[in-house]
Image 1 (spheres, rainbow, N blue to C red):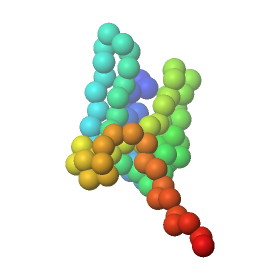
Image 2 (image 1 turned 120 degrees about the horizontal axis):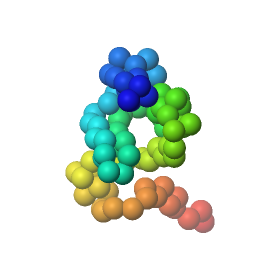
Image 3 (image 1 turned 135 degrees about the vertical axis):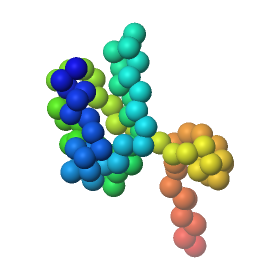
Length: 85
């Protein structure tokens, strides 16, 4: 798997990305990465070499604790500004 051999902590760090966890689902030919980065674009740049091998999706995530703190699952909604009188 020459492509997957390019996934390393050192390679990720060059893009400002930290790999927190990874799993390769053999039967699905699917790679799942949990990473931390300043922006989704940093993750896309790091993983750009995989885009020719299939679909690349970068999805925002949070910890379970963060979801509980904000009141549950679902998209983060910006605070509604108070009405101007």
